[in-house]
Length: 305
Image (cartoon, rainbow, N blue to C red; front, side):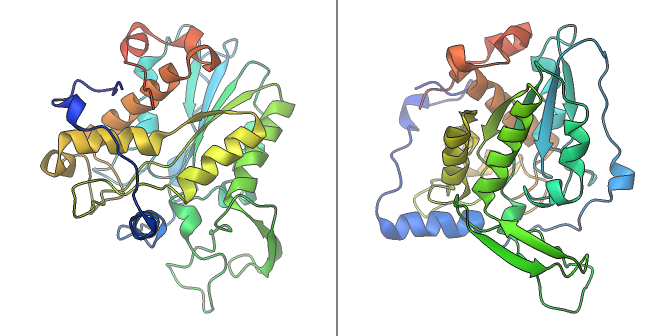
C-alpha cells in the first residue's frame, strides 16, 4: 500500500475495513448527517468564475462544493491547491466549485449548463459532491436565512420525488445523488469530455478506536457506483484521505481544519489536493490527465487500495 504523503509508520496504518453493522451504521451517520459547520450558501456574485488562461489548450474543469472551493476567510478548498501538479503550458485548470451547492443545485442554478457551453472535446471534468446532498430536499416554511432546499435522494437509484421548491416556488423533480453524478458524466461525454468522480472528503470524525469515519455505505459508495455505471474514472478520495489522517493522528489533523470538522485550512487543502493527485496516479493507464501532470504531479506516489 502506498499513501500520497511521506508519513511515519505507514505499515501500521493500513485500513482494516468497517467491521460489523453497528460500526458501518455509525460511520454512515457520522459522514452523512447534519454538519456542525454549515455556512450560508456562498454568494455567486462575489465568488466569480475562473476562466481559461489559454484558449487553445484543453481544460480541466473542477466542480464541487465548499470543500473544493470556499470563500470564507481562513478556509481553503483542495481545488485551489491542485494547479501546481499540472503543466500549465499543456492544460488549463479552472476551478468552478462553489460553496453551499449540492450535485442537484449546481445543476438547477444553471452552473453546469454554463460549463457545458464552454466544454470542448478533450477536456476533463473532475467532480466531488456529497456534503450538501445530505441536506433536506425541501424544507418546511417559512423560508429563513438557513433554508437551502438542496438535498438529493440518498442512493444511486432512478427514483424521483416531485416538490414545489420552497425557494423558487416552482415544481421540481428531485433525483438521487447517483443520478446527478451520472448526469454530469453523460452530458460531459456528449461534449467530448471525459469525467473523473471523487468520493467526498471525510469530515474530522473519529471512532473510539482512532479510525476516521468513512462514507462507506453512503455517498462514497454511491459515487463509486455512479462512476462505474457512467463509465467514468473513480478516485476514492474519502478512503485516501482517511488513511492519511489516521497516519497523522488526531492532533496533527486538527491543524488541517478551519472549523469543527468540515472545511479545511490551507494546510488541509494542500494535503487533500495531493491526495487527489495520488488517486489520479493510481488510475494508471486509465488516468486521462497523465499527459498533463507537472514534475511535481508525477512525483506523487500512486494510491493503491
